[in-house]
Length: 303
Picture 1 (cartoon, rainbow, N blue to C red):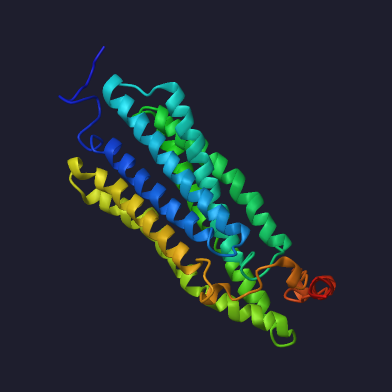
Picture 2 (cartoon, rainbow, N blue to C red):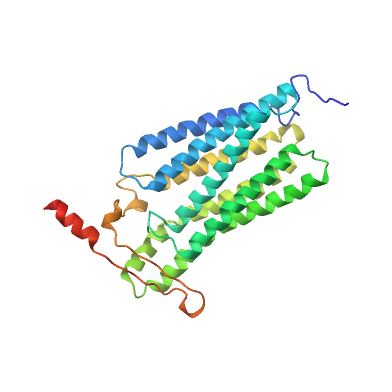
């Protein structure tokens, strides 16, 4: 039996700073989540705003368990099963919430419309199972020796599935803009929604930059850094995630003067729209159903 150990624990030189790094970043995400919830309490908000708050708290909790997991690896030489399971569960929830939230914002749900098309619903049916597969691959990688053949197979699966999820959340954005552009010439409401979607272009650029940096640039930096500084890769990923969360919260903050949210805050005040799209010759044709129930209720309440 061969035991490899550094003077201060079982972690390698590149992993020694990770427990404290994850713990500090968990505190930062938790503070950011509290600030976000405080702002939500002062304004009329959408349901997706609370989903964004849940994502921030889940991210903080995941980092706490990740830090505890590394702490026991450093002191005991192996992870404690209970803490490892808690980390994997929160890691799964964080990944699912992240891609669901990004896709919902990208489709304009709640901000622009309250109904998702069939194609957009299929995106969620694809992304959620892929996130489960990605977490299975991640757990196997964490519990498998790096020199084994299974390690590299599941590492490639994880990388491929992650890229598919990143690409999938961009499809609803393209579909929404394209369908609204085709209908804007005849439908006044679609033209208004098109103007709202154009406001999201900065957010779409943010998503692309975030994916490009965390999946490509950060990995390239990891390969070029000296071994003892490779923990900086995790630091860059966490900091970029924090910046992305903060910018997203700022863009879609619940404020009366926020141009992104200049829409009715009550679903009863919004006409029910159902956008029906098909492939081929009928693609882009919109069918709009209008009801006046919300307006009637509003008139009754004023009387």
